[in-house]
Image (tube, rainbow over all chains, first blue to last red; front, side, top):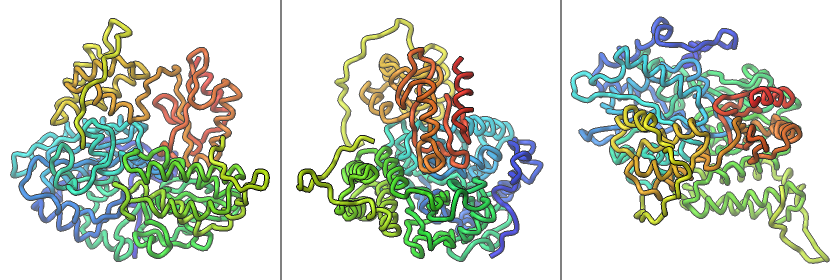
Length: 437
Length: 175
């Protein structure tokens, strides 16, 4: 393990006063597009091999090996599309926004490398609607890249012209789910699709499509330039490379920081984010609210792709760490998270649409002091029954709600149980359902 | 899609004689967006972003016009547009404030921001002031948690909000 210095954030200094937007000239003057040149000097198949060897895993949440995903494209079927997932709507996640705010060309170079390796015809950057500034920054950077021949030309040795466009979403978390994103790209409501067929076979406009996260693609220029061994020298055997970590919540210096995968959360919070604010550390969400919560005794959790098995959370997710101090009311925190899922559930699958809404109602009544003893088990039962992993829903949104609820209840049972008591009217047990919030 | 759309949605009676999809908007979509996609339907989101930017909301008549322009059934357009929260079907104030209510912003006090707005302008989330200057809405995570609590005012992000100062800024912006 050796992290010599920032890779993705090498153009973004820690001091806010020195940060600036890197346009074409600045980017090129600091080693920009060298990785693309190196990649284009290799046969496309070798670029894919290089990415597989590097061990690069998807940075968007699932951690799927990037190069392996590319090999799922059926041979000689064209056109092929690349959909760049810049929907970034998971609460606690803002790393991609921060990167593009300052260094949009690193993404465009990554897109150009992925497009070259996979013979892509069109790349669509699906950016969430709320990112107005970032959409403008990308549009301008793309125009610069077109002017310098990065896009709009043929892939060497073929007749395939590669174009790159920005496509703006319009305020829907579910469009960050890869097939929801594709539906939205096609001008429909963002309802996730039943798989198979997988996007690599029939994705956008029923053509083979790769979907990669912004940060994943932004790793490619450095991999092309410095090689797979260099990339693997950072991180752990199963989680190679540098990683952006967003830290927010109760810390003195919230922000985006880069280190290698496997860094301890305590180091991230104390060394980078200035320590816990307003009290002592109580709990933290490791990577967006879908991942569940780390307990008070898990402060030293290693942030890598194995975190799920080791610490009873769903996974590393987006590595957007949300820190909570000992003054935090975890019942209210969980209610906020469950409301998010209830609000963002697309409504296709009953367990998710109904389950999230009912868990929200139950948590509302617990917050209002009207929770019944049985509500603890009821929340668990509803949570465990929903998601793509229990096999009751199409996509993973419900798994996020499932893991958020189950880990809060498993790791902080006393916080919840202390709020529950038999609710009686005239000596008869009742169930309060509607609680005005 | 797993079903067939039958277009039984009646056209809305026009509310203004001038079309919402002005020749300039049509030209912009035809020249800039149609070439980007293999079909016209995919230009639906870009088209409605332009309409939102121009008019601040989506009038029923604009849905009719868009259906005709994109060669879709009105039901298909309504189906898609109504899914997205950013496409508002009701007009709002000149200053639309989207206050983030997700976890990091709750931990750092978005409630105080809403309370200050309520005290100053007399509106709760979802409401517009009587003079049509300010609309306040609660939205889910804006992707700026390091600047919590934060809000999007029209198309601009405001972070690290101090309720007093933010309300003063809003009074300036809506003047």
